[in-house]
Length: 281
Ligand code: PAF
Image 1 (tube, rainbow, N blue to C red):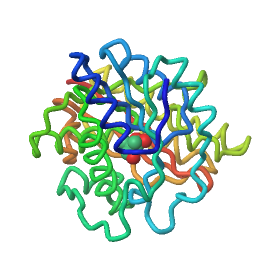
Image 2: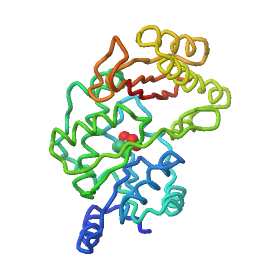
Image 3: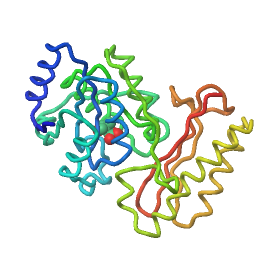
Image 4: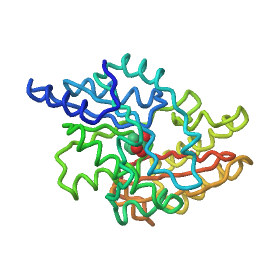
């Protein structure tokens, strides 16, 4: 497995693979890789001849008061995980390799990026779409792999690929959870012991909501009220949002039908965590 910070090296390598008739998968990440990322890489390895993992903390998807400087990084551990998972190349650029000092072109999306996380993070998806579009242009993969934990991000990227006629298959992979239910996330490392225990309210609310829909409840308010109640009972938790939306358009629903995404963002202390489930009804 190789690692490079240079766009040209990635292009040259992918060109060689293409000459050999090989397929290429891309797993875009911001590093500090965990079992959730590993499951994406393992799937990409199973479905493609060669796999590139991008490992880049993308500055333009962080808001001014967000955690860009504190975002955890450990490239040596990332290398080990990528190697174990069977990746062929890590692309680990410096911000300057991705963004020229006079960088001035962005991919901006309306509607799908405006609800849920877009309300409290108004520039986030512009940063995500721009970097993912750049990574797609640099690597030119057949398939790209994303986790369902970032369900709105997945809807946004699928929409970008459709709207801009990008010839790339977007593969969504299930949420990987800790034994007590907490969805795996690089940001879980911010939690102290007490907060870590409190953070299980997110998955507990997810499981209650999922059960209610499975048992036939279709009134969104009834389900969301039950989920919010669980979270509000936890003193360290503060709800940003708990909502039920169409999983593709991210438009709010009053009745649970179709492909329903129930998503939440909750502060545990200062750490903002997200979780969700999708139901096909
Ligand atoms: O999901 C992430 O880790 C990031 O948003 C992504 C897709 C790698 C873009 O920076």
